[in-house]
Length: 288
Image (cartoon, rainbow, N blue to C red; front, side, top):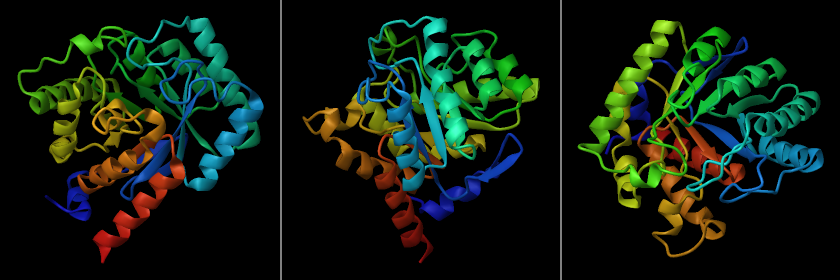
């Protein structure tokens, strides 16, 4: 297995332009998850007021988060649909409060709807995190290109209600790499400059496939794009350990360490402090 430092030479696009602010990801960064939803799989309903939102954002920033990823639509398996109006209400309330109280915070909007993207960027969001890779909204790629903000391109099949039945691949890694090649080519043709790839752990993949994906993460450096991994407290951990998401922090730390050693640039997590400690320890151990 290549070392953390060796893996990083494969990606030359390691600086993101976020609203004129250059953010390097050659050293791994943390994206803190802020779900302003009542039904997310782990923290649904926790952050439903301005007070709880701001308290959590302050904690994540203090603990070492570079990005705050705001989601108003739960994408857990089997999640119910949410109207655009309700999603906008949830995320814009959070963005307005955060930008007012933490003007230097870098906000990402976790959505697959171009209308939500446009409104969120207008209010101060500086990144887009799209679980659908542009599949659920034909206007998404054009919107991303016109706004010129970094775009997290994730791999998935179907939607939260159907993705469990869509995990049949001819060749898991090749199929996902080919998916990214096609999507990146289209985005570049439209003028999008900063593209981050997310292999989509847990989305249209079995537990076994998720581990195969993690063990093969270095292959995604062929795309020459930063890699984001979202493993935090997911079922690949708690199902393997016969526990629950509430007791999956230790397992998350273990797999985040593996992801870094395989060359991940951004860790998307619920628990920022622990992830930041992993980044520091892995960075120190591989530099010595």
